[in-house]
Image 1 (cartoon, one colour):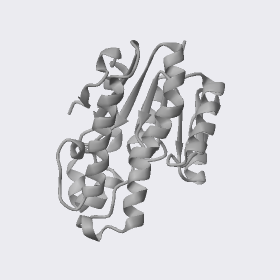
Image 2 (cartoon, helix red, strand yellow):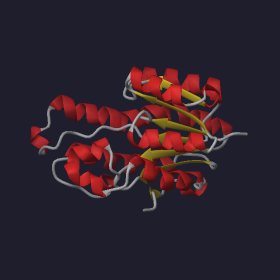
Image 3 (cartoon, helix red, strand yellow):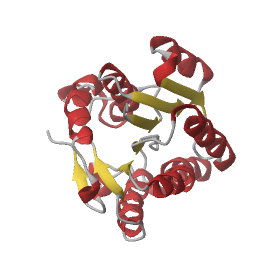
Image 4 (cartoon, one colour):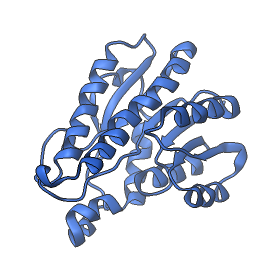
Length: 228
């Protein structure tokens, strides 16, 4: 039976690079993004019999519920759920970050992860196995100025993942995964031209893909980091 990975935020950056890597390795891949055109472009690139991509706002629980049901009905329960979708605030001291921007970062980075877990964890538990990886960050285990909202959400993901790991039955696992520093649009927004000193998303996927494939239930609750 083919393995199945579901990747949120899979239309660009790390999500897109990993979706491509797993599809090339003959996995079944499902996932979503926020814009219709990006999702359409992604779906056209891959065989429909091994992929399922939709437009979803991860912060909207009803939208995630509809997506999860569609995925399970079409492709079955994922073997791996990678909660990758995330936003970062524009560089600024915390007191200058607009209320709306702060709320959106929290809604996507924390509530969005919880929404996906709410609808996929019960299916994995019923089946008796599955791995849920919540993408963290180096800024989920350290801090930097001008990105306090983002840091707060990634620290929250670390705590959420460890607490949830104590709730799961044997065979099902959850862990926070630090991807490392990668030259993505998000990093460019923080580091500017300095982002070019780091690996591209595609280069990163060549390391991250095998690492994820090699994980087993023993990863439950552990703070994971993709090897550099």
